[in-house]
Image 1 (tube, rainbow, N blue to C red):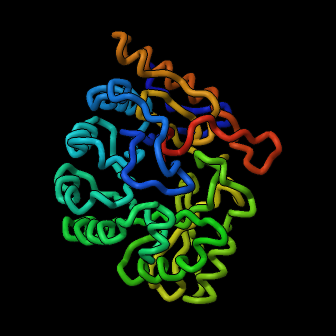
Image 2 (image 1 turned 180 degrees about the vertical axis):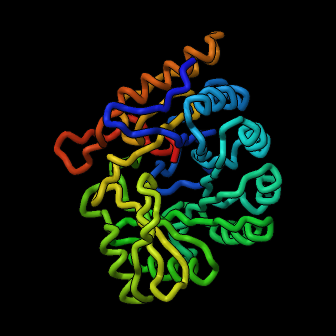
Length: 332
C-alpha cells in the first residue's frame, strides 16, 4: 500500500478528516433539520467504532493527521470517549477535535477530557434564551451554558464557538457573542449561512457576510487585525483584537470561498466518503469494511475519492446544485 500523500487533481494535499458518528441530534435548528421527523439511517447501517478506527488507521497511513468528530450531535452516540481513546492510539494521528451543541456536555466533559480530547467546538448562535428556543426549537440554553462551565472545569483550554450567521435574525447576537468569548478567553467562529438546510430555506439575501460582521464588531468593540501566521488551509480567516483582547474567526464559505486551499475529507455516519461538504457524489466504504476487503482496497477507495475532487462548490455560480443530503446527514 503506497504511503504517498493524498493529493487531488489541483495539487491540494489532504491531511484532515471529519467523521460523523451519528445523524441524530437532540435539538432542531431550523436551518439544519425539520421541526418534526427526519430521514435517519437505521442503527445497523451506522459505522461501528471498530470500523471507524480501521478506516482511520488506513487514512493515517495515507497522511491524515487531524480528525474532527461531528454529527448530528456526536454526544448522543453512546460511549463516545471509547472511540476517542481508540483514535488517539492510531499511529500518525496528532489531533482530535469534537464539534457539539453542548446540550449533553455537562455530563460528558470530564470523560471526554480523560479520553484524550483537547479541542472542543461548541455550536451556539445566541446567548438569548428566547432566540435560542426560536433557532433550535428547544429550551436548552441553560444546559449548554452549564456544559461550557463543565468543559472549563474539566480542563479544556482551546474552546471555540460556532455561530451560524443568518441575516435578519442573528444581528442582535453578534456583539454579545463576541464580548462573551472575549471576556472568557474563548474563540468565536462566525459562519456564513450556507445552502445546507433540509427545508430549502436558504437564499443569498439571508447570508450575513463576514465583512458585515467584521464591521459590526469593529464599530462596537474595537479594531481587528488579520493574524499573519494563520494556516492558509484552515476554513476560518482569523483575526485578533488590536488591543490584544483575544482572537476570533470568520468562515466566509459564500462570500469568499476557500476551496482552493481545502485539505479535508469527510466520512458520513453510514460509511460514505465525501470530498466536499457540498459533494453530489459519495464513495461507499462501508461495503468494503463489512465485506472483508483488505486495507489496500480501502486505501484505493480513499485515493479515488480525493482524485475525483472538484475545484470547488460553485455556490456563486449558476452551476451550483445543493447536495442531496441535509447537513445533519452529511456531518458538520
